[in-house]
Length: 197
Image (cartoon, rainbow, N blue to C red; front, side, top):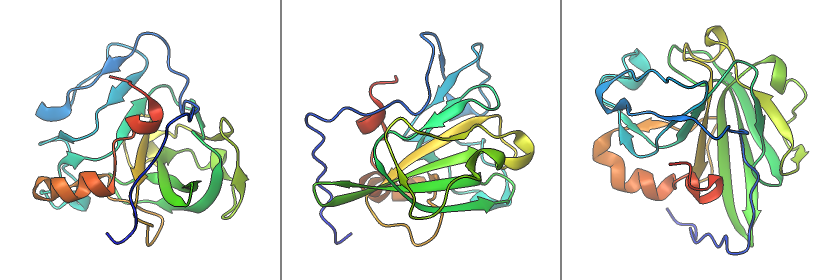
């Protein structure tokens, strides 16, 4: 990566992307499916999820999760964590993919940061256009249903990237052999989401 990846968030306050209740479940997907006893839940960053990604999309070797999943009811609102612009949006229809996804671009004192929000409902993102300015706390979508979000339970996959995406996609799951590089390129979303777990 050639760009400066120094992010200085001192003094910054970010908006939540999902308004979580006090009680929510922290998943452990290291052994496969982990059902939540609560309505809302969190899927962890930097978690090796062997046995969870069975579709052809993952080639049987991509198991390390490099975003954070926030699960909840269908149509749960998703908010922008910071001011920015809509960098791209698309429908990724493959089994296990993001379904409706948007990527926002943010500028922090000259350093660019991109944020992906995946598994949204198609109806909820119709109002968005590439290049559109979005303010922190603005609703940018809702959790989509399984039939339109790649076949997953309703949730948002949130991921940060220090490298400009070449299309409307980021690998949310990578080969564990690429962990060190991937974690530098896709930093921990808790930098902006706070200490969720």
